[in-house]
Amino acid sequence: MGAMDFTHIESGATAEEAFQRAREAALYEYGHGGYTGSIAEKDTYLVFDEPRTGADEATDRAAHLLDVDQRISDKRGTAGALPVRLDGGDGWLFFGWAAS
Image 1 (cartoon, rainbow, N blue to C red):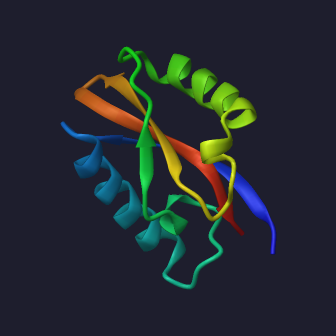
Image 2 (image 1 turned 30 degrees about the horizontal axis):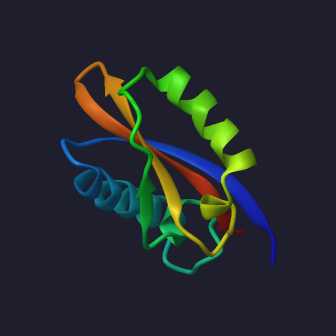
């Protein structure tokens, strides 16, 4: 079994609200069979306490964190979460490695 990196942006006032919505969307899109390489494979997340930025800046930061932070580098471990500004309000960018 391999691993794939993923990013998923979801709206939500809180990280927990956005995380649940993101997982539900991924399960709907990829199914419940496992090994999707998506956020559907994650049960937990780690919020990085950083300023809320635009999606492009958050995506660049997530790529850097995937390279340097061991807490989120395991395909069976936790996802990372960064706060983002969206056109419709606040949101979260979830990222990590997932089994595929």
